[in-house]
Image (cartoon, rainbow over all chains, first blue to last red; front, side, top):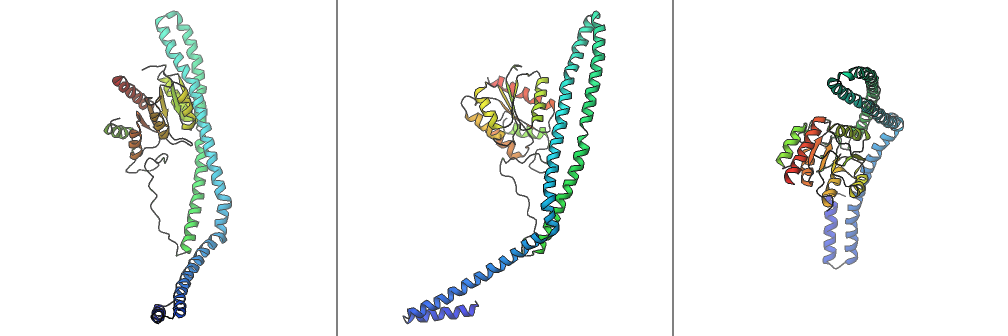
Length: 222
Length: 130
């Protein structure tokens, strides 16, 4: 409703009230509020259409459909594979190390004993030989456990590629619905004490070294 | 430092628990036990006569900072020394941990030497105040 129309209705409402014509007054009041409602409804309809168009674009976009239908579950599966591979490799390495540590201990105590008692040198030489063989096979096991890096590296690269495709597609859909905000918001700052996992990039509030942490703790009296 | 002291290691990753267990063994501590988050650690702490707690911060279920607060709020456990070993390294988190009464704070990735230094420092301080 135009401003002039509303002013006209308002004047007629005042005149009707002054003359005690309550029926007319009600009618002009109704006209005024009808105008407000229809204006609001028009705005709602407009926003609804824009949103509908934007989502229509998302839904009818074949590439985005394929990404959500196949690429996202695929990325999830790949990352799960990475977790399983890295965990298995870490356990394989730890088991080899746990097997080898007592051998190192055996060599140290054996050497001490042999240096005190020449009669034990021959035994010690045998122990060294035996331990050397087992250390070699243990170290080969540690070496081979690192093969996960090649496999997981490839899988993570592929996953980054998928994430990039989804990102580009979503940005292009948002740009096509021009009324929606596309300005990149700054990432949300974590709440005080909120656990956010390892810091993967430099940030002013992140302590990069243990000695920074120690300095801060010292300031705090810990 | 009592080499026979009973230590609880709390971390959701079994590999990290194994690493800490091995490092502690190397330092002569063989009486170590494990839990995978605060919720599983809590009943162990309540009933287990532990002398030392090493915990991660970010875990599913009950987080390390909440476990620390629970320990400090419990009359029977309040004086238990607690060492946080975590990838959480923001200033506000370290301040929060200090306010909650942590005895030591190690950021991951860490070295065997760092673990030894922090243990020595914690028990030197406890001996000095005892």
